[in-house]
Picture 1 (tube, rainbow, N blue to C red):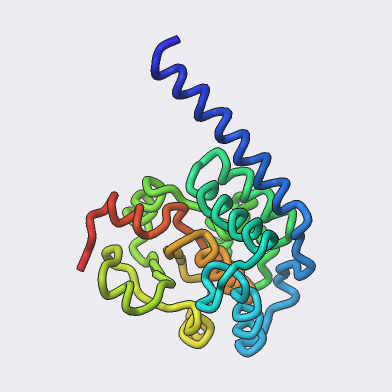
Picture 2: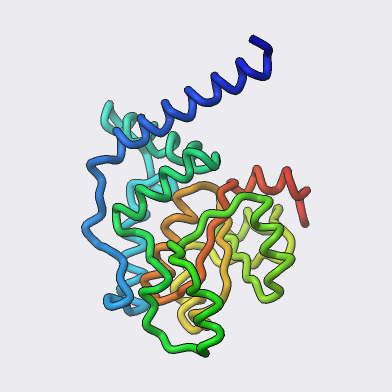
Amino acid sequence: MGKEKRRTVVDFFVVLFVIGLTFFLFISKRSSELISRSAIMSPEEAHQDLMKRIKNTPIDPTYSPKGVLGMINDFSFRLLDQSSQYKVSNVFIHWWNKKQGSLLECFLCTIECDKEEKKKWERDEIDYPVDLTWQELKKKQREETSLMMIDVRRKDLFITSHLPSSVNIPLNQLVDQMFTMDRWTEIVLVGENYWQTKLTGETLLKLNFHRIHRLMDPIHVALKKQGAYR
């Protein structure tokens, strides 16, 4: 068996292992708060919910896993973060998020809009947030001139390096800065890891935003592909 074939076989079993382990670690963590257009949150509720969900995750500044349980949780966070970067395992994660109720199908939208616009965006049952590869992001940037790319990292990290045309809205300022924006804005979220963009996307859905996407690559990987922009 040639090197390329062996590598393909190994990659296949690694993906299967990651998917199986991710499922095992998160099968008991089904969310009890399903996202629904009929249960839109106020800015205060959305901010409180976001801060609550950040607690005890890797994006919590005070996060410090202790003991065996802490080590297991930390490993599961890191595993899911890595798995989310690969298309095959990301499909599984996207499906699992839908089962948890943390995705929202486009046809459930209740906000009135132009018939042609509605027809354009709701021709398929799209589950938001939509996960994008780097190639899919570049294609969307070419097709959507009004696309808004939001970098949810801290301001100092954003100043050091960021993607062209991205704007910085740190997580703790998200609700205040986004609440007055058009809910039909085409948005792509980028961040340090899966958890930042996942929680950001779910919070925006709870504020009745519609076209939310997240870049699968963490920012340091995206910067290598793009070339740091200062």
